[in-house]
Image (cartoon, rainbow, N blue to C red):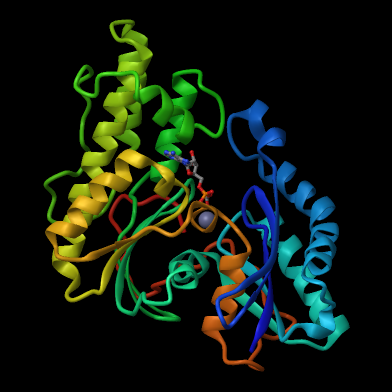
Length: 344
Ligand code: KG4
Ligand code: ZN
């Protein structure tokens, strides 16, 4: 049995977890920084990095204690080495290097996106490669064909905002606070999804890419017009986002060839309306629909430990001079998207 300590610090969660190759999460701790970033309506990189630096070491100590283990009981130390906010990534990676050096255990540098991509297999032993993965969070918005650990083909990415970002910006426009996704979903329950005419950017286009900047601007204009109730705006936005996601995913599934399942991961996978629509889409394709439990969908360290287990045979490791990577695409061969911004 291989046991790996995973460390996650690429955004606003400080997290540590110990996972074994039998798919057991032996212990995990997570410290959210929501409170620290709330006044700014989004994650402030400098504040995030400082909080990781403060919280990470005691968090790892507590995780080891919960597991009743010491570093000696581990087979390796895995940490997110990118992509993400570089200050936070460096805190996690350097901590992992120090622990690896002190314990003589191998360091495993993990791509955060690979953590999201493989985590559904931690929860579901039946999930076989290749599967279609819709990764929707605050920082990522991609459609991938997951063919094996380390083997990904990207079919779509966003040319501007990620979907979670669009939810967060909509929440900000409606004065709902941060993080906005759950609040938009809640308010939308009281609204009429047909009340506000909103665009569906890229719907109907033959390539499955995403775009949400135009939708966000339309939400802003609708709010400023003073003509609509906030709940109607929230509901109409969520409906438009749902239509975009299902259309884009359908186009990608048609292009992807055979897959065993449609899997959704990332924080926005918490959205009930989206989940229901994706489940229906999967059924139309005769595919299983897999949505990992929410704590595994949002940023966490168990997924980093699991990716460490899946990616590397025991004993294989990365060098102690492994560099943190602010950008690290899962499919480096994917063609750049015209008009795309700086998203990883
Ligand atoms: O995966 P995650 O925790 O962190 C990133 O890697 O970004 O995702 C956070 C994102 C935020 O944008 C948040 O607003 C969104 O997921 N989110 C939701 C819901 N719950 C979280 N968006 C829509 N509906 C939700 N219920
Ligand atoms: Zn993430």
